[in-house]
Length: 379
Image (cartoon, rainbow, N blue to C red; front, top):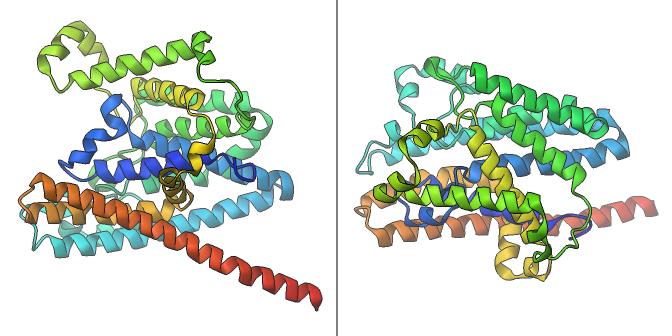
């Protein structure tokens, strides 16, 4: 803990950003070591859950200290920053992909979902402003914008009637699974991340922030005596085994008979399939119980991940731009694994350098702010 801040949240946010970047590079060998390889969920669930955790924790403190109106204004200001970042990021991404398409050995415009802009640029610009035009890699940011936009209405209910807030969120999620409600996207499509379904994960993250501020003192060895932990561990291990079996057809056919496969598949990501949700919640619960705060968070690797987690917006945006660049260099290098490994690690280094520079810039500005305050006090 650091000034009441659970550094594990920053650590896992940073780790999720790395996983998202690696998963977005086609045929990246390091993508075999991300969380999507050990269960039905992937880094997107981590990102949304911890976004809800961090948002409710931060703005909940503001609401208690300065009131709901001030907290709402700060939330809306953050939404505006995210919206502007989305517009500029999309413009940069399109420009970069159009230039890179002339050098790569494959159609990156089609692969990135940018053909719509070439066919109907005027309507694409309108859809971009309305958050309906979302090329590949861009989907998480509009989802976060919409979820954060609803937080001023949700925050008082979460803080005063937590069970009711979670119940309403769960009810909406169930209705989405039945009726498949979603928001329209470009060219008659729908949002890849259905906000009516993924809001549950955001709300559960906020609920965890409000209920989980007590310091965990139980040792990891004792949690194996808890029935809830044992059940969660069984879910995690079973889903990991099924996921690993996808690489070996013979093993998969033994583990998953046809009747069970008809019930399991498809494991829908757009509407946050209940299997994805349950597996992620089980994984998050086991991680929270087994990975406690401690000296390990002061190690070099943990500190780098925490730093990226503290500047998640900037690092995420950089990762979105780096992924197609890595794909372009991989294509130019014949998709050989040394080139793929080099681009994946080079992108990670760039993300680390950005986070380090942002941290240094912030620290550099703090003494000046302190001197200004001191000067005002002396005056």
